[in-house]
Amino acid sequence: MSLRLAVTTQAETYERMIDPLVERGIEAVSLQSSQRTFELSNPDLPAVDVGFVYPSRIMEGGVVDAGLSVPWINGREAILRSRNKADALARLSRAGVPVPETTIISNPVDEETVAAAAEAFDPPVVVKPNSTTRGTGVAKVADLDSLLGVTDYLDLVQDYRATGDRSYLLQEYLPDARDYRVMVLDGEYVGAVERSLPADARERGQWKHNVHRGAEAKGVDLDSELRDLAERAADVLDIDYLGVDLLVTEDRAVVNETNARPTIDSATKYEDGFWDDLAALVRDTAAQ
Image (cartoon, rainbow, N blue to C red):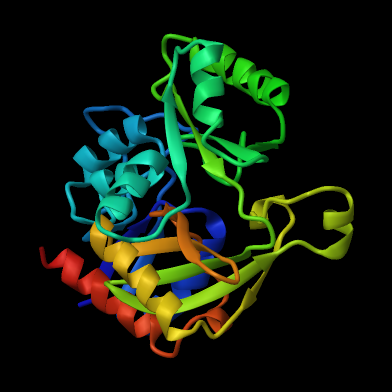
């Protein structure tokens, strides 16, 4: 009998997994978890055996989770642990996994506090909201006035009482670092891409390597040391299906961020056996 897998990720991931999983006895069922309504006593959800990554909106995810009552590949705690950049980096650093030099700032603080924290970094410094994705709100600043201007905007946004996360990061900037997204599945490396900006984007002054902001992703055969680094990160964070972002310079490699809801890319960018491994994880999770 086939298993039914509720898939809450974006359309491209769902569409790419349909046929490979059907061939392995698993039916992927798309589940829209936001921008809709739910009747709480009867939320009109599909009958499934297991879920593929807890919904990104935690409040709606609670309703979906209660209605489905199934185990998840990457449940609520895994999503929150990865989304909280400071939490993930602190755990990794404590475990001896190399990460960029980073300071978390918990608002509200005064300008003197921000300035003092920035003094620990050689300019430019990267400013990141602690829990956004796809490079949203990330800025690179080279002087104190620019830094305080960026943090002024963060102060305005985070001053709203309903804002759940009122923190941001100051992080060292690694010029000329190569940017890799490494996929780890059930503790094992299963593929990687190198993300880079086309020449015209660099000429316009772009520097962020997010695919959603125009970067190109090319499949690469990663060396064993970088594979091990990504696997260590997934093990420390205890997340079964994880995208690990590595920044690699001539003299160091660091885990920059992680993503517990990574997009499944085209099959050519993964190791042989990727779909077999994913199907095995689905079955193991369903059996919990």
